[in-house]
Length: 221
Image (cartoon, rainbow, N blue to C red):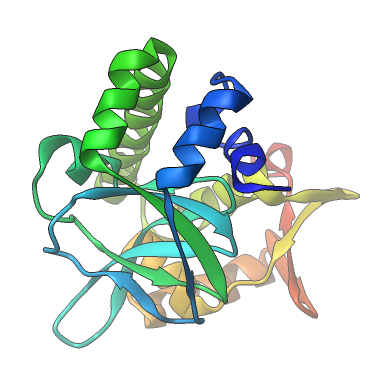
């Protein structure tokens, strides 16, 4: 599959004909990253839109002790960098490769020109931005009204909706470390460890091998 055909799988470019995508592909810059390599730092200038071609990346905030708060994860054919590309302000978070990954980039001026020429791209971009804002609102609501245990369950169910597999009365997802969960929900690792033990004892979650099994929502209420 060439780059133009891969772009057809990206939501933002899915309605553009392949001939035009071939031209767009010619101006894109591709780059590979090692596991844990930093792609860009919080505060960097935002001059390019990034498109994930393989692997996955995470957007994080890093405190003075080096601890991470996870903002978002990006997998194949996701995009990131759209906020800074549009408003020309500094990057709001640091992007790190979760594994060996690759992406391609398009500069601000070519992308703005594309949005003017292809209104569907502009509409799709608005839909993506609204989706990101809704997720941010959900996170704020979660931090304000849910305790750590409830935030863990909400986060696990969100993951299950995207990548879970039904297994009897449980939903199977990839096992996460307590540090990963803590960075996702904005809580200390110690609090997460304590709550995970409680959830396990209550039968809400169980771990087996590389998987975490989550009791279906109907069993909670």
